[in-house]
Amino acid sequence: MSLTLFERLLVWVMRTIVRILDCFLSLTATQRKSDKSARLPPITNPLLTATAMQLARRIRRKEVTSVEVVQAYIDRIQEVNPIINALVKDRFSAALQEASQVDKLIEEETGGEDVLEDRLPLLGVPFTVKEAFALQGMPNSTGLISRKCVISPNDAPSVALLKRAGAIPLGVTNCSELCMWLESHNHLYGITRNPYDLGRIAGGSSGGEGSILGAAGSVIGVGSDIGGSIRMPCFFNGIFGHKPTPGIVPNEGQYPPASGQQLGFLCTGPMCRYAGDLTPMLKIMGGSNTERLCLSSEVDLKTLRFFSVPHDGGSPLVSPVDPQLIQVQKRVVEYLEAELGVRVQKLNIPQLKYSFQIWGAGMASPGKDGKPPTTFSELMADRGKRVWPLWELFKWMFGLSAHTMAAIGLALVEMFQSARPTSFILKQRETLQRDLEELLGTDGVLLYPSHPHLAPRHHHPLLTPFNFSYTGIFNILGLPVTQCPLGLSKEGLPLGVQLVAGKMQDRICLATAVYLEKAFGGWRDPGKGSTASRSTAP
Image 1 (cartoon, rainbow, N blue to C red):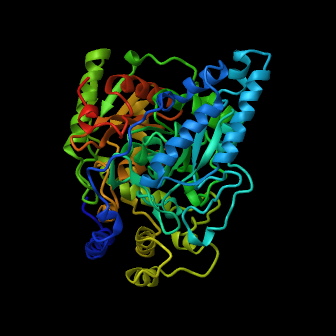
Image 2: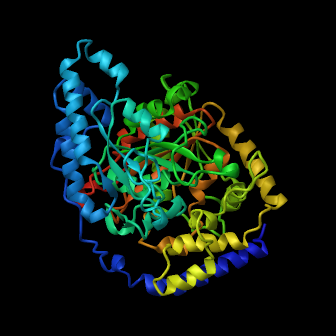
Image 3: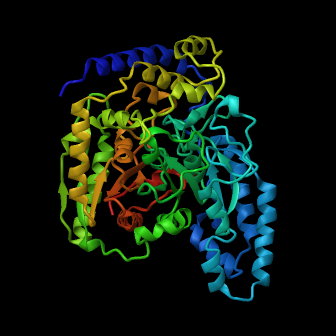
């Protein structure tokens, strides 16, 4: 099916605007600082290369103190954050006090290590939180200047559950303005940089979280995902992330709140450097809901059915997939077939070509109460004076707008977007939903590219605004997805793949990620020489 008149107009308007603006963007300070030879300092403290569960075990056994672990991460953040601008507000003093209390608790515990592990599985382990989530005493602006004085009086449920498990928050991390763009940039905190190449994006909207984790400034963190906001930052920063089956991890306590049908698309989930930490984090963050996922059940990968889809079929709105991503996905297929003795079926799914249109239709749909979702312009206004996107664009040209170009562009698109999806798009969604659920069942894993491009240069997503469709489609379909790193490209940028499973089958894609981590090396230290950490075939 050809593009509708609206879609043709939308593409033409967006491309015309961004080509004009690119002349200005290329002169920004960020672009001038893009020095490919600049690298983060390498890791020197071995505590920074242990998994969260290993750290918790060592703390319980008194092999290391919580104070030592927390201080190691504080030192690393102070070393790398001036370079990547990922953590926007810290609570280091409070974290050290809490770590000292943990060490005292362990000294006084008489029930033994097993009692502590059962009651407080993350006791003494530091973590970071996306600034869009409420963390008591920390800002909760979501990059909106009008919310710069908002301080959270309590914790979001997912954050509270991690703290209740003994984890210690170090601070909050940057995100895109109002969490609706694939680059973490706003006029309150500035722009976050990719630890593998400072001239490239860290992704969004959980980009600060992805960047600080990729830079080894944190071991585990909290993100949210309504169009790929966990998976894209994890991909660009070479770490693991999981978008759970909807309804498992509570979404309350983050700004902006979802509305309309968006309530069923938004997911809160774990982000981390090591695949083995995903399942324990998910168990904690989901509370009793995770019992529905049977996460403790063993997964025999040899009994699973695997499928590989190399691209979306050629949507005119979306960039072609980078050959290096196609090649690394092919290597995963070859490895699974050789080592597990399975046959990976290569598929082309024609409905994926309409991923953006399906995502857009879902996001604009009214909720069960019949009320339409809150518009992006209304969110930008934050219950204040009405925001006029065309006027904001004019002010932006002279550096007078309080909003980023990405936010203004989204508000402009919203002005011209039809509130009613076409019957054709509704049919494509229905067919795709049915076919994928039947394909995956309870034992299927689908390999799908994380994004068409490797981590783009700063602001360049403005030229390709619909590329997030590779992740966004799975929010609409409600399927669990694990983002898995697969080494580095010839440019030294992270490679990766999405692992998609059927509804409530999170344990299957999580187990596959653990298996591929062993084969492809997982996260790589961005501070090491690039030639030593390139991807190699297993």
